[in-house]
Length: 189
Image (tube, rainbow, N blue to C red):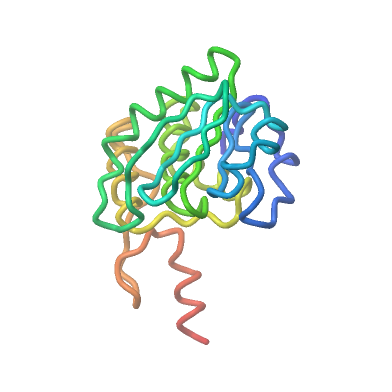
């Protein structure tokens, strides 16, 4: 697994609640809506850009912070793919200007992590499996919906002409292969 620069694995551990910001790289954080609307938290983490990956969350706008809206519902049929490149490019641009980005959705579980995975693939040259492993180590509650997984798999192929994650049949329907053991264990209980 490739480790993003400016972040030690030990720094990725110990963020147990969905209300915390999860540091993904030296300049990228993922959180839920509550954290993203806290002036104190944004100030503490020197956030210069907030990316809201939802349709239902309304941001509180604070001075000197740029806001970007990604109007995506957390449903398997929602198109998040079209946002992978522009949002990854935007996060990279903020980083190049020495800024910090906070990306959030409602809970910081599906939409914002999916966009985070796309960024790590494009700008940190991580394959999808490594990007997921890294992001999950930073924010253990991530779980993009299956439609987002299918789009991420397509994006990985576009970037690298190969896939490290694929969808498999399971007793609960199509799932990413990395969840196969978890589902099998759940079904055996």
